[in-house]
Image 1 (cartoon, rainbow, N blue to C red):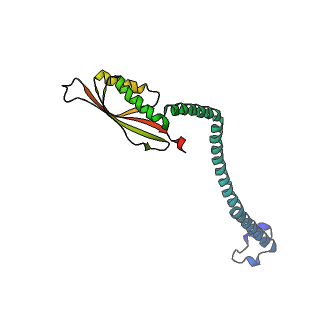
Image 2: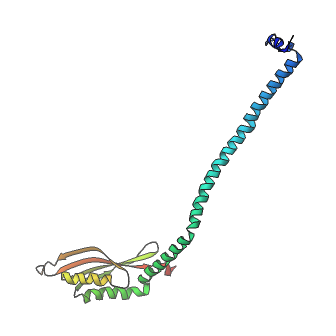
Length: 198
């Protein structure tokens, strides 16, 4: 009996009566199938997940590296820009009065109105309002004069060496003069840097 005839005569329901060679081959096939399946499930699949995670981490780290590399490439430009900002900030700080300069600045604001030919009806500094790193000193002002005198006052305020801003501007004709003079109600604000108090 040749091997093909023996294979055809095998009873799959009674493997125990198979010849030793066929049982050994069947056991070897089952062993190989279980080994391959187990290796795939327990080794390859686990390693594949680890590889997938490592690839995702690699992509993320490459993106981080590229971002940091771009920042590093622009570091000199950032340093130059920072230096320029510090110079600009220093120039602005020099335009803010110190605590000792505030009284003379108040006199300058008042004198600007008088120099423009305006009659000062109210000049009332309020208490300082402290913000993050600076303080605001609001000054309520009421002036009486012609349109051109008011314009000269505003121009004079803009020309002061310290920063003074004008807010809540209200111009209306004076009630008792028949409209020849105007009344300017304005809040002038000057600013002081607070670092000196730290």
